[in-house]
Image (cartoon, rainbow, N blue to C red; front, side, top):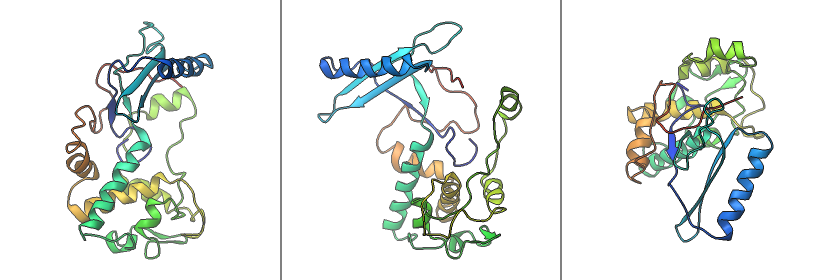
Length: 235
């Protein structure tokens, strides 16, 4: 993911081991059940109320080598990133640098317009809450193995993604319904950069990742690879 979407936005690493006992047995049972329905490999971790953790794995990380899934493997965090991005926006509001009631037009003039799209009416709050109505089906479709091989290294800039979205009419009038929107968070990332002068991932790193000492949570940029160990993805 080169922009702010549900693709690869970072990696996280679970601790090795975990507490023993009936809770861990239940977690292992559930992991085994997920593997049994056809999932290649499963890595699960639960943080308990007291600050401990339970970890379990099932299946294999690679179908060719039969390497087992690691308890401390790296993985793509996907849209969990949206919680981090939203936190940065809330911090910026607390600092008085923006308001959730600011419009998209306020920070990104002329970016959202045409075909019924009006950045002057959509607020940052609506972007965060997935109530903006902005069309969200603009990502290239990968339906076959050939599509994957042809498109897997393509990089799409935020401006390109938003421009593709506003070529469509909104899904609904802003604020009148709800629909999960990756494009909305692309716009949020663009606003963060406009306000701070830094890319959204740098603000996430400075404000959250470093302060919480999440030493195994990283921004891979445009690299298609993950640190080792990690399981291979299959579709």
